[in-house]
Length: 215
Ligand SMILES: NC(=O)c1ccc[n+]([C@@H]2O[C@H](COP(=O)([O-])OP(=O)(O)OC[C@H]3O[C@@H](n4cnc5c(N)ncnc54)[C@H](OP(=O)(O)O)[C@@H]3O)[C@@H](O)[C@H]2O)c1
Image 1 (cartoon, rainbow, N blue to C red):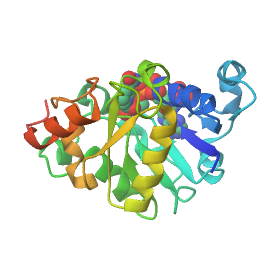
Image 2 (image 1 turned 30 degrees about the horizontal axis):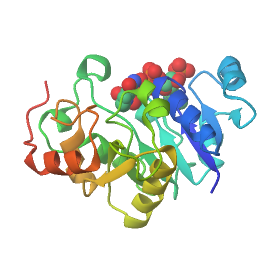
Image 3 (image 1 turned 180 degrees about the horizontal axis):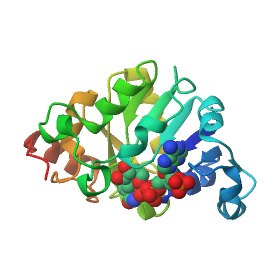
Image 4 (image 1 turned 90 degrees about the vertical axis):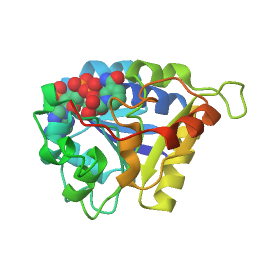
């Protein structure tokens, strides 16, 4: 698999595109306003990037990054995402997304909300725990000392394996947090959130995390 679909061409989408292209992937990248508005970005990204609609980004790749504000996930091309591995970078910011009762009450996680919207897709949480600009900067070859680790979560082990391989190629170790229902351990406000950690450090922190009320 050499093509990554990207829905959301902002800070996360564009920086994953930069890192993926550098690692040898092609990207299909999209936003809400249409491919023509991405002309400058695809010119900067070069010939391995193509601006498309969100629907075509979903249709054209087996693995599709969703990097839109959480409140926008209802607008995703749900049918085109069926049977795809959907990498979920989203976080909950009530000031931006409005209050979401299921998250405020700790009855769900951001990734479970997305999975519920696209039940035929296979959601894997990743990239929510790193500042966007660091994605193309912090990667190191496998085995390098102090290699940064990123957490993933998901309910499907083969999808998690594919996302882990992608992260490894981009330069990151991976720590599996468990199923989507456990992904609160790396959501906003938790101790490891956006921290640069090695695999060993992240593995040490995650079991100690306590679930707190969203504010
Ligand atoms: N920024 C970070 O460092 C960071 C780190 C980790 C996780 N995150 C999370 O990742 C998600 C994206 O954050 P971001 O900072 O990349 O946001 P951003 O810079 O505001 O970019 C959002 C992108 O989503 C697109 N979009 C909105 N609605 C869409 C739709 N219906 N279909 C297709 N594209 C749509 C926007 O396109 P238009 O401009 O055309 O509307 C824009 O390209 C958020 O949940 C955020 O919390 C961000």
